[in-house]
Amino acid sequence: QVQLVESGGGLVQDGGSLTLSCAASGRTFTSKAMGWFRQAPGKEREFAAALSASGQITYYADSVRGRFTISRDNAKNTVYLQMNSLKSEDTAVYYCAASKFNRPRTDYSEYDSWGQGTQVTVSS
Image 1 (cartoon, rainbow, N blue to C red):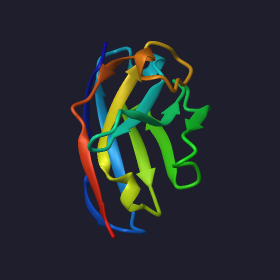
Image 2 (image 1 turned 180 degrees about the vertical axis):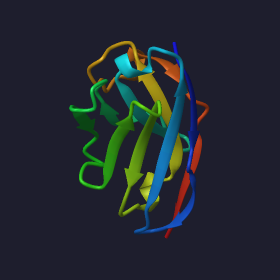
Image 3 (image 1 turned 30 degrees about the vertical axis):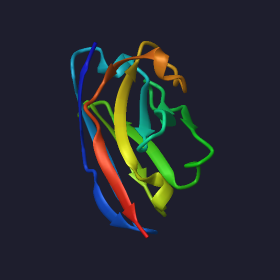
Image 4 (image 1 turned 60 degrees about the horizontal axis):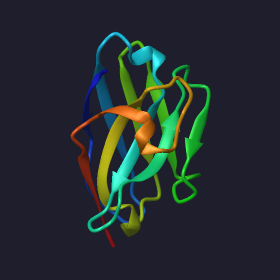
């Protein structure tokens, strides 16, 4: 497993941008697909974006496709989520996760390491 620490959350106005970072420790980071999930108040945790270990394959939820970009820097053991054109419905706690596999996954059960989460609030 890897240890994950998210940062970069905060309060932003509707239409604004934020970039989340997830710093990983552990020697297996570069062999793992990474994902971002989010959980809004009163709702279940949902998939947002995922990226293969190589960084060449990406998956996005329909709700964020075209607005969010997931990327990674394996030299820095860090994965990012660039979020543009933010909407109030993007308000949630965002979690970084490391998968058991090297290809991206959308089901949270296929991830075995999780960060503590970072709050993103979009005000209208």
